[in-house]
Length: 154
Image 1 (cartoon, rainbow, N blue to C red):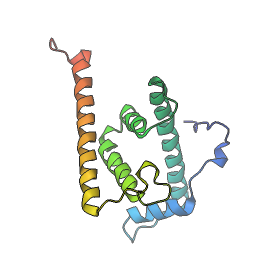
Image 2 (cartoon, rainbow, N blue to C red; image 1 turned 180 degrees about the vertical axis):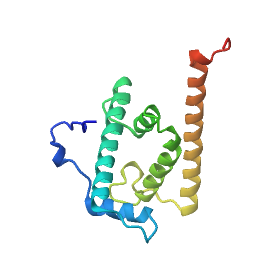
Image 3 (tube, rainbow, N blue to C red; image 1 turned 135 degrees about the vertical axis):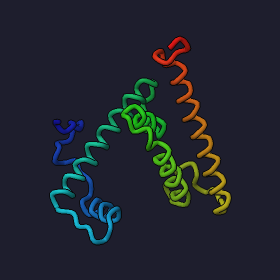
Image 4 (cartoon, rainbow, N blue to C red; image 1 turned 90 degrees about the vertical axis):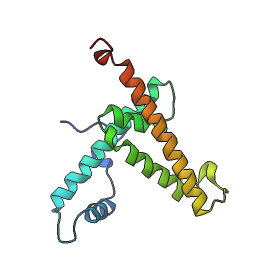
């Protein structure tokens, strides 16, 4: 398979930080396991291709909704469309945790200046998880109901 073309960039210009990727890879493995440099490079290339794939599909989802900005919901839908639906809840949880982690940062956006105790933040996170599950379950229920191959006559 040919690597995806990135608009305005040569394939050599697009990569992920090798030190960061090496750290992530090592953290995921037992301490006695070593990874060959070629294998690390291959993993980095796989990650770049995965990001390209999800970004491209997210853009398609966004375009179908006639939006010009890719939102987290578009990325989650793209994961579902690409067959990674089993990871959506975990990805959404990581996204919510990222939002909580960045509440106090100067670039915290709309959450800047909001003072929350850890308990309040946890309660808010749980509320958002419940909403996301409800949206996800309602979406899946609607898709199953509208599936012509699984109608009442089948």
